[in-house]
Amino acid sequence: MNRQIIFDFYNTLYNPKTKKMFRGSFVLLKKLSQDYKLILVTTFSPERVDILVKLNLDNFFSKIIICPQKNQSIFKKLKRQSNETIVIGDREEEEIAFGLNLGLTVIKVNPNLENPTITIRKSLGERVL
Image 1 (cartoon, helix red, strand yellow):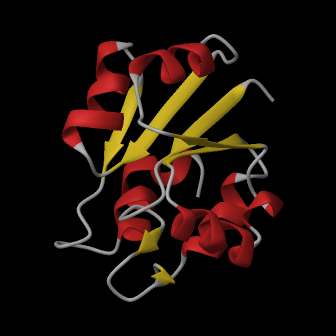
Image 2: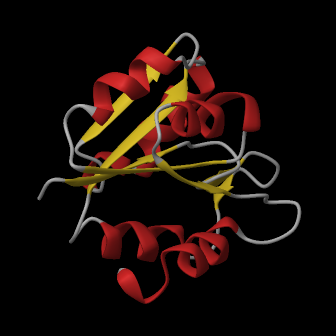
């Protein structure tokens, strides 16, 4: 498997307002992990680490990167490890910009408009789901 998806966490898979994963996130991750190497990139906070541990997300992700601040070099290193990389997130100035700058496929979600899992499914279409 030489294809990978880099996920953001807050407002992409996890809703910090409700303190729960978005509906359908676990089903989506299970399905995608069959065809893609999944990587989670998120910024550090003690609360976020606790949430990640409680959710047992390492069952889906081959790599979880918790960093002080997201930067393009993280995404560049991950890009080198795959023939096809997709970046999924909600922040224009972070993961979306890094992905676009590196020429990667990006899927921007907006949890205020639609459940991110629906956006992701629509964007990936029949190709995956």
